[in-house]
Length: 372
Image 1 (cartoon, rainbow, N blue to C red):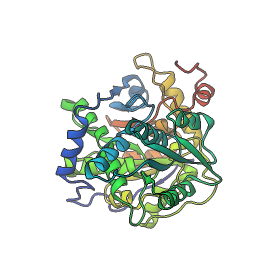
Image 2: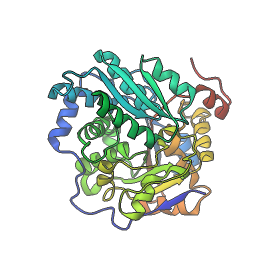
Image 3: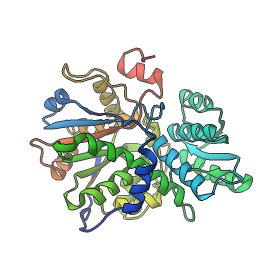
Image 4: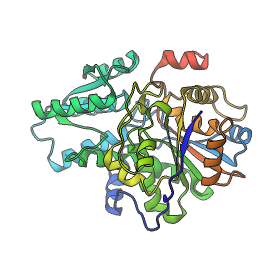
């Protein structure tokens, strides 16, 4: 069954999140001429079946011609590095990844004329490895977890003079993860432009991972909507729920164990300390779901209600809908969602953070042939 946690003080007045108005302006200036907004998809049929007023999906399954949102953060961070002169003398970008971040770094490095070296934990699938190698990056497999890969990538950079481009922070390494999170706020700028006169949703369910996207959404909402912001609920896998564990203890906590989950992009045992700073006052609830709910969500996207479009959504991308679906079988999840936003007419936003990243797995789950 899903595990849930509701913090006692997530609505402290006056909290504005990580970023200043000047930083948001810099992000917008960068992206205005560089991106075409991804769609905000309405699923009225599924919303009616789930008893919701509306269900919106921010479709990040194709961003910069890659099947995930991660390139938003990487492209912006690399631009900031170039503008500051920090790339002078750099020949190689290094990172750790569960797949999507690594491919985004490899793509950015290739376009900038750098080499790339990506550290991958032992559970990263062959399809994700091949995708990173297709960007001409060197792949280093790690006999350990994603968090082990993070440490080895940092050691590599210190030893070789490469530049580490990480979406998680550690003491003394914060500016690049901060810029990556600022880049992620582009997702919310586009969502707000799309919901426009309808106004914001009542509830947003956002993937946790190391906390980067979650902190970006939380910070954007606090800065732009203030005390009127939607309720925000974090979702992560039951066996890799490091953000929920940290929220329970009030400080960054480490989840040990095999971290076994099909939601590869959320297979993290340690929260980013920088992201956690923004989460303690801005997240209203935490849900950890089993993989079966992820499979159910992927099938719902692929086999829609008659009035809804079909969507090809990967494992981590389906996590928000997975949390929503789990309320049908979990009294604790239902109670948490009802406490965050009234159940009658509730309008919900989820983010499909990745698309077709593992075609064979998507075929097995949905029973459909992956699109070309």
